[in-house]
Image (cartoon, rainbow, N blue to C red; front, top):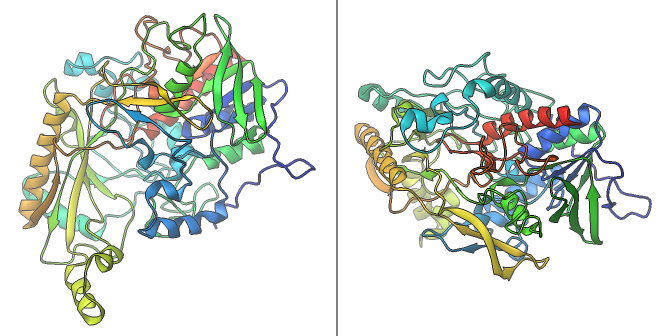
Length: 540
């Protein structure tokens, strides 16, 4: 059984109550994976918690309708979760265009409403990139500092996974058994065996069996951008849990600025459909992601902080990173899959720890689905009836493809700023994305492509497409814009995720990552959020 939807609490007059919470201990800005975990943990510890979420609360029972949108070619991806071009406006001034709105959701649950659900731990060397690889910087914490939180995050999210000989040490097995390899995985395995390339399971934040009151995966296949069953984890799980413990969630409440003194935040000023309010609290946790978090701090400029709040270092918004995609695919003279699977079941980290100053870490992904769907094929051809059926029977299901994620290095000229010539629906400057990519990442894409070509050649596939250095794009993992570090002159938050400049302001987000590694970031976001929650709890 899938869990029932949470109900929005309404006052007696039937309108939604979005007024401030009196005597709040903690105000959390954002209800994605970081904000929801912090809220759940602190509310369960007995604190008065309020979450301010810029977007709306989406009804769980509407997910089937959103799935229908997702599979209809007339809807683009942002429309699945009610994207708003004016509200979500942004600018691009970097070397590469960054399609920010293609893969972000503003709503209760945040990006986990539409994510694919892969959850890997960073490797040990990722925390010590400068020392181990000679590039980037070292984190102020080591893998060992986060190891127990990684295990806790896996239990909180519900992770299905198996053995990975290249993964960092772990203290216990994954909470659920891994998903079994797919049919296309078996084809890749034959080629990889010949080439000496190891394949292993992908840890997924989706249920391979019933877990935490949620059903096992039922195979809808539309995991990205919507899971109608609730088997794939999303942050509404912990939003609901926080509310059950007494937390208050205020949706459609984008925070406009943070009011503050020299050393502390005093209130979050937020807009609602009914007007503007001020939420006061003892502690504030900004968990608005790698773009909106630095934007909010920059919008909160003042006489005390003329360059933006918590920005005495001048690094707020700087060092914007995203993983880069490397991919290769083609066709075989045989069927390549049995049914549609909406997520990955096999990958390889074999080459990850070979990284050095010249070539970065990367992981290889084996797709369970490649090529056009029957709907796309029907809409792109001129044939009908039996001719169309013959084409579908001969061409559908013979495609095969691989992907990969590649690390990008932190660069000061890759940043999130403000475009003061353009405003959003509340009159605030929109985020300006100045995205640049380092040469090491481009060389790493070439290396990943070479291995992908070898595997497909061994399979006997005709290679028909490739995403290489000239055509690469982002994985939509926003990292690095409020860097963690020991030196207040060169970073925004310390190792506990408290801002250096303010004694009651914390940041829980991938924005605190000093380097990106090449692993999907959500499990690390969750682990850091749990660590942040402990720090805030100790401060109350």
